[in-house]
Structure formats: C-alpha cells, structure tokens
Image (cartoon, rainbow, N blue to C red; front, side, top):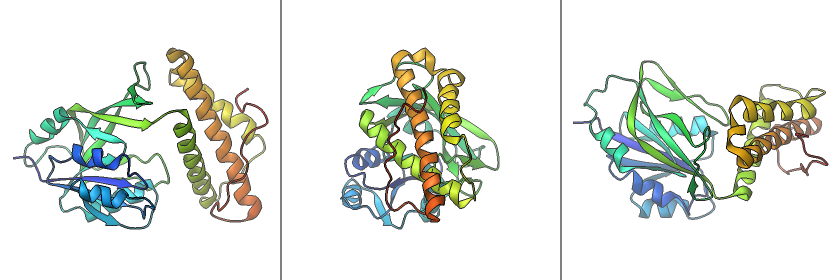
Amino acid sequence: MPPRITVAIIAGNEEKRIADAVRSGAWADEVLVLDSESTDRTADVAAAAGARVEVEPWRGYGAQKNRAAELASHRWIFSLDADERITPELACAVADLPGEPPDAAFRVLRRNHFAGKPIRRWPWSWDTMARLYDRELARFAEVAVHESLETDGPVGKLRGVIEHFSHEGWEDLLERQLAYAILGAREARSRGRRPRPGDLWLRPRTTFLRHWLGRGYLLGGPLGYRLSKAAARMTWTKYVLLRELWEKDVEKITTIPDVRPRRDPRS
C-alpha cells in the first residue's frame, strides 16, 4: 500500500482553473486547497469539485505552500499549482510506491503549455520539479517567488507527467510577470537591497542573454526571442519598482507606477 497522500494546492482568484486541478488529484486520500482570500468563487468551486478548503491570508509562495503542508491530514504531500494537472500515469506511479518510500521527495517531469498548446521546442517545453515529499523531511524555501523544495534526504523520480497550463497567451504572461516583478521588488527591499546605478541598463540585458544563450532559448526561434525579451522586461520592471519603494520609503507597493519603458529594455 502506498503512503496516505494529500494533494495540496495554493490558490488565489483561480475559479476558472481550480476545478480541473482538484479533479486531477481525486485519486489521493485528500485534496486540500489553501485559498488566499480570493475575491472570486475559487473557494466555492474548489469545494464543489471535492476539495477540503481552508482560507488564510497570503504569505508568499514558499510560506503558503509550507502552511498548506501543515494543514494537510497526511504526512506525504503532493504540491500542485492551480494551473497544473496530474496525469493518470503519474497517479498510477504514486500508487505503486511502498508504504514507506525510500526517498524524502520525488521529482516529476512537467510538460509546459502556452496558449493552450504544448510547447514543442526545448528548453522550455519540459522541466522537472520536486513535488511529492515527506513534510517531515522537506519544505519549500520561504521566498516571495520561484520557491523550490529543500530536502533532508535522497530525491527519487516518478514516471508520468504534470501538465502545466501556465499562460493563456501573451497578455496573461505579461500580467503574471508584472506580479512577479512586484514580489521580487518587495523581497529585495525587505533585504535592504538598494537600486544601484546601472541596474536598469545592465540587468535586463544580462537576463536576456541568460535566457537567449545560457538557457538555449535561441533554439526556439521567434518564440524563444520573445520569451527572452519578456524576461528582460520583467527584470527591468522589478528594478523600476525597487527604486520606487526606496524613493517613497515604503515596504509595499500600493500603486503601480507607469513602468512602460521609453525604449526596449534589451536594446
């Protein structure tokens, strides 16, 4: 018999996507949705789909996922995002685990989609994420964004795939990146990081090259170029907002300044 498992999903204003995420985890012993005080029907839709729903204030991605693990009824946690789906093959792989798995966590292959279609070109078509874990041996780094699982023990790998429907299109991607830029600026400000001369010139270019060359996005043709350019724009926006925080001497951005550059931040 496999260990008893809670599929834990953090969500905020995800009424359009949360039901499919919950249903993809219906094989588990429990599906828990930790809703961050959504202003839409996320909590109601999740409950109707079969999830146990808890509502608490937003703490940041890593901290929110750790709180969801604390609230879970079971020691083994499958961390799932609202824009992800667990495939039947992956569910079967989890069901084949022994009652006392030998590893502290397990990595899962994730197939990324853009505008509803799977991305075909490397390197952003696939990635691997540690998602199934023993909460007594692993937890997420409590950073504002781009959290990762930190484990005290070996990490195995499961067959099967998570389907990831991250962005509905370019407008959705840019909105998401603005949200990440806000979180990144706030985290940098909380650490005492001050904007430096040259940040707005150098850092976006560095980000573009890191994606275009370092991560191989150039192999993706026009889409790779546009994604690298979007990443550079997010970096530029983050440092505009960080400067705004220090100039106003505040910890939190309450109004978003006009962050439209007069010129392409990468050019």
